[in-house]
Amino acid sequence: MISDERVAQAIKSEEERQQNVLELIPSENLASKAVREALASVFTNKYSEGYPHKRYYGGNEFVDVVEELAVERAKKLFGCEHANVQPYSGSPANLEVYAALLELGDKAMALSFSGGGHLTHGSPVNFSGRAYHFIHYSVDPETEQLDYDAIEALAKKEKPKLVLSGYTAYPRQIDFKRFAEIARAVNAYSMADIAHIAGLIAGGIHPSPFPFTDVVTTTTHKTLRGPRGAIIMCKEALAKKIDKAVFPGYQGGPHENVIAAKAVAFGEALKPEFKDYARQTVANAKELASGLQGHGFRLVSGGTDTHLMIIDLTDKDVTGKQAERALDAAGITVNANTIPFDKRKPWDPSGIRLGTPVLTTRGMKEKEMAGVALFIAKAVESIGDEAALNQIREQVKELCSRFPTE
Ligand SMILES: *Cc1c(COP(=O)(O)O)cnc(C)c1O
Image (cartoon, rainbow, N blue to C red; front, side, top):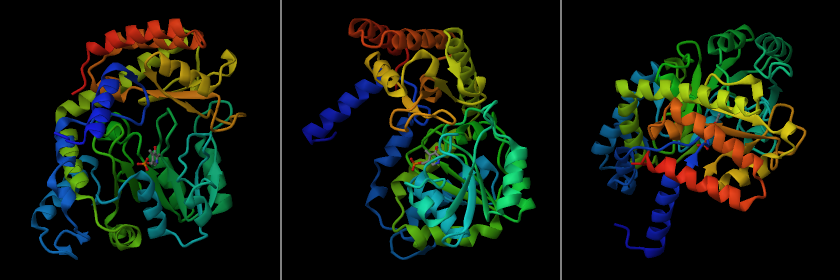
């Protein structure tokens, strides 16, 4: 029980909000009670700088148990040679990899922000873009998908030291094997940032970056459904460099309560039920995508192979922010997002991004997705009509009541 009344009230309100809305932000999920219990455990009290059996502080015999469990399970889940489970979140994990493998000013290659790349992939507003010389490839303007031949040609011309794949707003499958070949051909490291699709890879519904890729980062709180945090996985030959870059290179004391929760989440992901969840997440996304197309929405790249999709609202004469606000009023949570080669600014771009992990975790299936597509279509048509949006909100609440959050 939390005795601080104002914080307790905010937590209660947030629980109700999560129960009563359709959460379609594709980077979110609902961590299990077991994961949340580990997060709230006494491991939050402990300093444990260093690695298992090589700590700079005493009293770490039980910390070592949970950290070794997390490492062992991560290796089994993803089939990698080495795992560092200490990164605080996805953004520091990426910067730690660059610090391990690159010198300041070195050239690296990644997807452009408007094509679906992440800010930590060399955006000028992020430290990665100031510290390293990022060259950006984009998606093909026609297909809005990766053009591997064009990426290979750019790599041969620019000769980067690192080739990065893995994205934050790309709805299609990624050919990690091809990326590793492109990197090898120019003597670069291959890196994959699987923050969004880690759960789909662990669940066997998206091809794995292993054994081809040199270094892989992932968040643990998106499709993987664990606590907020990240891990870095790599080939044994790079293990020392990566570990040194995480600590003492970037971080201090690891968050062992979060690491305990990562161990619990990896244990959950190793169970057969997790494969069903991953498969259902993608099946739901495909169903939602075709439902939206049936209501006249244009989807970037024409659909999805993953848990997420991007609606291009240009032909609806609606901006991403306007749609985000109307949907919010209707109890549907999404985020405004750029579309490839967007002519609008990132703060109010031309699209919205949505995905199915949370609805799938709540137990929704294909049958519910048709209804969700209809709610979205009605809400976008009802921009500015508060009464209509409120009416949708009541219907959304009714649907949500049949799928309780834990
Ligand atoms: C979410 C995301 C990150 C950043 O993770 P944070 O935990 O928010 O720092 C990095 N890369 C990609 C591709 C992401 O989608």
